[in-house]
Length: 263
Image (tube, rainbow, N blue to C red; front, side, top):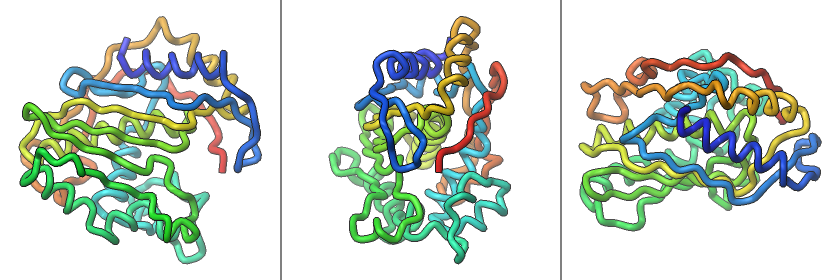
C-alpha cells in the first residue's frame, strides 16, 4: 500500500467515526475534524492515492497556472483543458485577486527561489496567498493558502497549510500537486526533495461524499504501490516547465470515484 493511501484513509476513517457534523458556507452539511496532518518523505515515495484515480495531469496544470503563470484568469486555465475553476469564474473571466494574483503581486516565487539559493539557512521562506486587504475581492478565498520552506542536508522541505480541506475531492488533488511542486523547485535550485507535510486545519467530508468514501475505505486492502514521479532533468528554470515535463511512472489505481464539488 502507498503511504498516501494509508495516511489519507486513516483520516477519512477518523472523520467518519469521530467527526462533528454541522453546517457550513456551501449549504451542504459535513463531518469535520480539526488539525489533520499527513507527512511524506519525497525521497522515498510520491504521495498520490491508488485506491482511487487522482487526475495528476490536471493537478499539475492548475499548479502551473497558479505558481508559474501566476494568473487569476480562468480562461487561461480553460485553454489548458482544465475546468476546475469554472464554478467560480466571474463575468470578467477571473477569480478576482486570488491565488496566482497574490504570487505575482509581491513576486513571491522569485523571492522564494532567491532565498533557497542564496540564503538557505533562512527561517523566513514563506509564500502566502492570504492577503487580508484583498480577501473581499476573491471569488473563493484560498484553501491551500500557505507554504513554509526549509533547506537542510541538501534537501528541500515544504509544509503546506490548508485552512479548509474537502477530503473527498480537494485534498488528494492538493497533496499530489504540492508534492510535485517540491520536486520541481528542488530540481531548479539544485536540491533533492525532502519532507512534505500537509496540514489541514478543518478536514471535512460532505454529506453527499460519505457513501463514496465508505466505498473507498473498502478498497484499503487492495491498495497498490505508489508510482514514481519524473521531472524533465533538462529544466533548470522554473518558468520553463510545461505540463509535459512532469509525469508519473507506474501509476496504477483502482478506478474513479465520482463526487460533486460543493460550491
